[in-house]
Every structure is written in C-alpha cells, then in structure tokens.
Length: 580
Image (tube, rainbow, N blue to C red; front, side, top):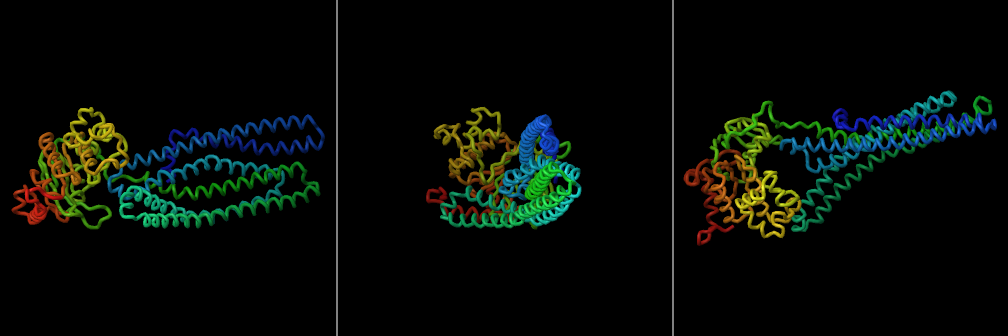
C-alpha cells in the first residue's frame, strides 16, 4: 500500500525532502537555545557579567530568528508537498478509473469512488504533511532533548524513560482499537454519499411520489450510523489526552522534587535545572506530537487502504500486445458465445451463434431480461465473453486495440447521457473537429435540427448536467446525432427511440437507410414498427436466440414474434395507426 501511494509523490520529492531538512534546522536551534539560557544564567546573571549576557543574548536572538525561518520554510514546503501529493493521488485514481472495464466499475459504487477521491485523499494529505513535519520534528526533538537532559543529569532524566514506556503502551492500545472502527466509518461514508447522490439524481421522482419524508429518514439512518461510529472511535482516541497530561504533570512533579534536593545537595545548578525544565517540556511535547501522529495515521490508514485499492485495481479488459489498429469492416460474428456477469452464477447469454454482414440492419426484440443489451455490449468489448468468440470485421475483438475497436462502434444506450455544456460541445464528443455544417447534417438525420433551432441560443444552448433542461425524446435524438458524428462502421441503438413518436422514429430509420447504408446497424426496440423494416430481426428469449429472420419469415415461424406483433396491432385505430 505504501509503495503504491508513495509512487504518486513524483515531482514533489524535492519539497518532501526539504520539509524535514528545514524542520531539523528548527529543532537544532530550539534545543541549543536552552543550553545558551543555562550559560546566560550561570555565567552572566549569577556572576554579573554584562558582556557575557549581551553576547549570549544576541546569539540566542540569532538562533531564534534562524529557527523561525526554518519553521516557516518547513511549513511552506510541507504544504506544497502534501497538496501536490493529494493532487497526484486524485489524478492517478481518476486515470485508473477510466481504464476500468464495466465489470471493474460494477465493483465500486459511484458514491464510494467519490468518497475515496475527496474525503479519503484529504485524510491522507493531512497525514502526509504531519508525517513530513512532525515525524521528523518529534523524534529529533525527543532524541536531542533526551541527550541534552542526560548530559545535565542522568539521574533526573531516568524519569523520562518511564514516561515513554507508559505513553507507548497507551498508543498501542489506542491504535489497535480505533483502526477497525475507522474502516467501518469510511465504508459508511460511501452509503451516506450514495443516499445523497441517489436523492438528488431522482429528485423529480421523489417529489412526484411525495417521498421526501422517506428519503430524509433514509439519510438520517445513514448519518446516525456515521455519527455513532465516530463517537466510538473518538471515545478511544480521547484517552490520548488524559494519559498525556497525567504523564506530563507527573514528570514535572518528580523532576521538581528530585531537582530541589539535588540543588540543596550542591549536585545541580539553578541554571541547569531551568534548562532541564525546558527539556522536560520539549520531551513531553515531542511525545504528545508523536501520539497525535499515531492518531492521525490511524485515521488515515483506513483511507490509504481504500485509495490503494482503487490504484491497484487492474482492468480485466486491455489491449493485447501487437494489437490490430484497423477494423476491416462492420461485419459481426457471434461464434457460440456464452456470457455471465462476475456477480452472477448463471450465464445471461447461452450459445449465441449469429453472423451479420457489413451494412445490414439488425432489429432485436425480446422481453425484459432477455439479455438484448448484454449481447450488443460484447461487440465493442465492454465485457469479455466467457465462452466462444465475438468477431468484428472477421477478427476476434480481443485482438484489437480497444481505442481502435470502440472508435468504429457508436452506441446510444438505454440511459441517454448528456454532459453539462452547449449542444455543440455535447455533439463534438462524436468528433472533436467536426464543423458546424457537419453538426447540422447529423442533427437533421437524427431529426434533432428542427427542435434545436427553436431553442433561444440554437446550437449554443447550454445543456444542464444530465440534460435536465431537454425532454427525453430530445435527449435521445441528440445522443443519436452524437453517435452518427463518429461515422462508425457499427451503430448500436439500445432502445434509444423509445421516447420519440412513431413518425419521428420512422424518419430516423429512413435517414439511416439513405445516408449510412454501409454502416451495420443494431436496433434494440420494444415496438415491432421500429424493427420490421430491418434486413433481419433477432428474437431473444432468456439469453438465447429464439428466432432470426425477416419480418415476414418470423410472422410465419416464430410464436414469440407473432404474439408480440398481434398484441401491438390490437391497439391499432380504425384508420390503421397505432396508439401508444
């Protein structure tokens, strides 16, 4: 885990090295000042030597200024190193998430990934800054102060060894008992963020069904769980403060009592006792800083594990060595293909054997759960098959460079997604260099140009996140236009005209037939009218091919197709048009 995280320090290595170096300078000066103070008292004040007082005082002032400068520079470079480290961690996580296959994405919730990139990274950032500064300062201060204290009086300094043993035992207890709780806390954060995200995304449904109370209660339950876990963790962590204070006061009392006896016996000077008290505070503050570091590291360790998990996640779908960079044609072959999701024990597709020629239009119908979407997602290799082979252009999809393969396959999914930005910016996801004329052309094909021109800013109209300021049918047509802009060899429409009327649906299909005859088209639909003009129609049933043929052939040979056709035709008006 440490190796994975520290690999992201990268260009901030210099700042990470300078931070502790300046901290060492600060500590050395802070340790030297009490020694100078003892000399000032014993050799200047008690002897009445004004010159010694002035020289020693000037030296102490210079050392204090140097210590201040070192502390300021250590803080500056510590902030630079920790902020840069967090920046790199977020960037590395985001880059790796982009490489995930759908199976990898299914493993993590959206809320969980957001929590890891925000809350968890912030925890690690704070811990890293504390480690760079305090993990150097505290041990250095502790060692130097102990050496200086023992050089003054070994007998009195033995008190510190007992203090260290007591604090060490307390820290082991605190760390052992709080770490498991913090792991649960950050896992619960995922549920909390998930509740918020789901509520905001579906706020229209929540209000339509008057479920605000239910959603508030669900959030309150998740929030209360986080609260209770934090209370449990903090109940353990707060033991650090009373143990630390008890140790500090006991050390001061013991050293005061023993030191007074030694001064009375003439074995210790007043100046040395004053210096020793300063070292008492230095040592105890160092121990307190070390305990704070342990607390911070305990909290951040759970976050570090979660970040490393994402960074170490390797996609199970990647481009092979010497991958093919060019897709020969839009032909698609399913050669006895079976497929199952990782979380499923049973395959969702079984022994699919299909052969589609380049330029064909293939309609796909089937009941809910018949694996229509799963079938087409194998074409651009969004998932890998369990058995058999999927070939595009005569080549196994596993032999292609992923970018090359997916660049020739355009998909309009069931859930249409538009991003915040103008209509032009959304369309240019299909081709970043497309001219305005090309945008208009594909929008006309998708029957989107007409409604775009009625908008106040036309093609420069701003689309809100998720496309909330356009209707479902408008969103579908914009997504189809975006897909067409790729000029793909294969176009997949996954129930992507369900929100448009039958006339618009027919015009879109007519435009496809005229304008992109060489593109292989897969049209998944619920309406027979959307696929009946296809070259061939695939009927899916429970993950298997129930029938495959033309509209006329299926009416004669497929009971499933005939039943669907008859049930939809029963809604026909007297003039022959279908009701919806």
